[in-house]
View 1: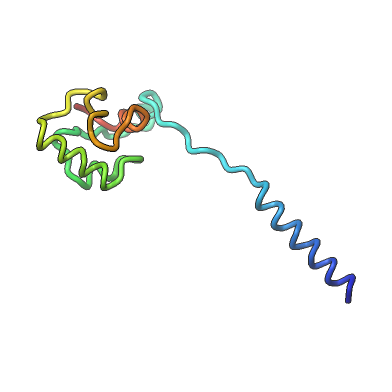
View 2: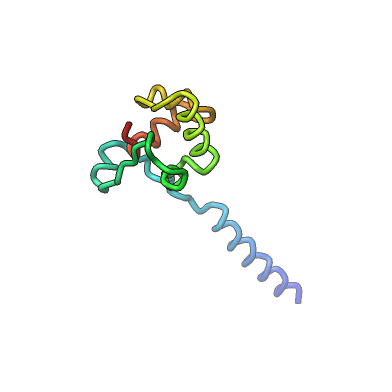
Amino acid sequence: MKQLAIAVGMTLLTLTANQCLAQTQPAPEVTKASAAAHNVQKVNINTATLDQLDAIPGLGKKKAQAVLDYIAENGPIKDQAQLTQVKGIGDKLAAKIGPYLSY
């Protein structure tokens, strides 16, 4: 009985250790070159709907709404630098979503 308990314990330890040690691959970063290679359809940020902006990977509904609010208050966004003035969008996110946008 004691040997069975030890065997079951070792099996469980081995299974959980394998799951803990499993390495995951980070998502590939989208660049202008990779976006072009995958024929990503660009969205005009100034004419896009909430749903179109929400569909851009990394943006989400709240930030998409913030973009629309910014455009309503300040007029069209002319470039990626101006996009960083939108609440919640910094340089890193602007660079990430840039390949999906036209201005």
